[in-house]
Figure 1 (cartoon, rainbow, N blue to C red):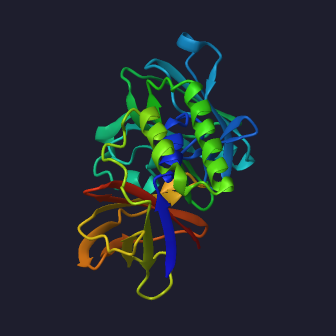
Figure 2: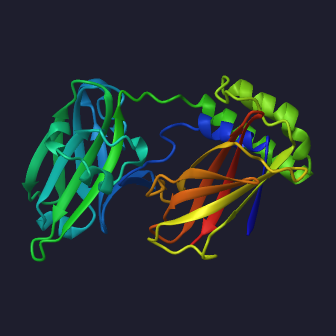
Figure 3: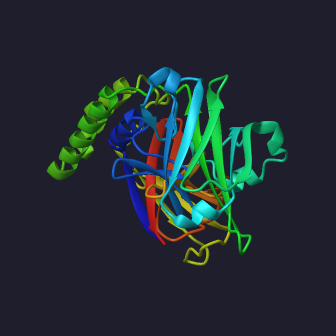
Length: 321
């Protein structure tokens, strides 16, 4: 059994995340390395950049674009293999419902990808540099799909990168506010004043987030969240269930709560491969959570949101698989 304590102060951290600039980290198949944007098509890599020459001249973007306008997508190959592979490029409207967490498997589930396609360039060999020009006529959420086929084996490699057209970003001030909140949280942890921060610290977080935390904070100083796995272990690529157990600080069982579960792998910037949900209130503070599955090794974070009549609390369970 693994125990995780949650307090009102953890909302400080949530507030910092809400204020973190949206473009602080790349997502999908594009990552930032040494101030360069790199797209990973399986093991194949290329420098990736986008221009909007009529709007911002030579300014480069990794993915998100400020306005709907003529856009030039450029890939400069880092692997020589790409220079002899037929490469195709497709842009679709994001109809997956996954937003920033859309992956190739989500795209493959689209029944008619042609209906969602706004641009497609059929496979062709482009030595050294691959350039695509497309003029967006509307803003919104899109997904880019790059595919390359090995000329000898016929194996297909693909990458997807969700992006937004019409993205302006929140500016730099939210970054500094988030940084200050994190510094404050670190001070409270190191000084042993964590429990005392519930009133003042939480109030600051709620004010800064403009009331995004609609339910009030829990009146108890802390909740205790535990979980068990039926087989006492978590196996990769196996659907399984958990039993969540929730108590208050005095050991009282939390019953009748509404529980939401999300999470993912922060280092890989993707969410859970499934949508786990609590299917049954077992009584005595126990809840059955079904639909859990992990598809790769590494550090996972499971975020448990507990909503009661007294308010809302959030716990993060960390797993190293």
